[in-house]
Image (tube, rainbow, N blue to C red; front, side, top):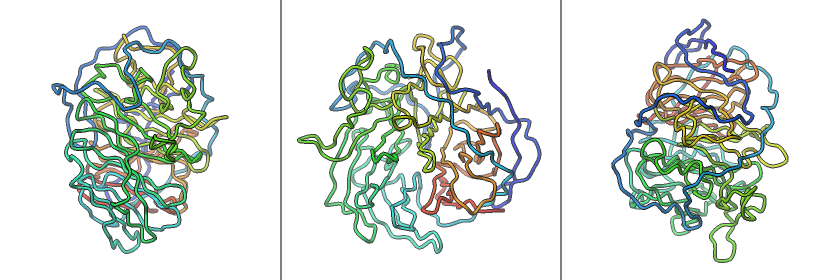
Length: 447
């Protein structure tokens, strides 16, 4: 069962949100996220998609099929799936927030923002290859890392993600190597927030068979583990069916301990689904925590509840938001999110349907609402009345900023008129920042 609902309209940049219904919204809140049986009636689809940051699909690129030094590819999808997660935990309903924006700084091409514990600055990632530390009050900036000579930049490739260790002493980056591989690198961080290039230590390299669907985010969970979302490898429609195969690192959410283990540059958490070998007769790479993802551009852990939010970019017709809650284990344990059998809640590849997949909590169709979701974080700040605990996100194509109120069954339209939104990310105090492809970094403030 799905419910369609109206959203609140909003003025453009630097204006506040206002009341009124938007009958053109296509967003659909899915009434359950528990596992479902595979649908039996497919819908038609084509093979072109739009993904952040800028490029269209490339379907004519040949590439090696290996995915990582630690995984082996299989062609048969698993026959058993993840256990049913609990329904989303009850949350307070969002009110009727008035929201505006203010310009903080203009950079090159910001695609990510990270917070260093104990540091009130914004650490912003330019896709072109630099990390910049910015004072959120004055906009004063200092470059703290420059890897422009170590990456390939363009389309969906470049320096894509940054995360700091829970004690702030280390930083981790996600970049595209000259050969297109995804590389996760560790750096030592000085007291001034500068990343020491001489300390660079590569943790993980994953071969990318195509140039798109790199994802690129990084996140430390409340459990202290490092989570690495990876897209399905690219082209269109997941032609190698990697997302449904947890022996592939691609199309998965990885969970690793960045502490070295013997000759390995990182450790496998003992409670990972496949840390001890096959699970329920299904083989999986020991790094894999969840799978069935297409291009999980941004992930976020709610610092209050531990819930995991994933903004997963769609193929031809539907964008989606996934939310799973923590139980005895951290959120996302052994969850199959359904791609490429499902795009959103609709059948995409009938041959890749499987039982036990977990539905998104919201989908919307390509069109006026956009064509490429840019997540996204739950609001846990204090500056904007009645916005907590909404999940705030945007779309690269439409420039609309939305607030998903699951408890209230609403998708609130906060702002529109923005340009090439690449991310919505929290700052040190829980307030949210909107990053634009044109370089502007905007803070959400009360209207």
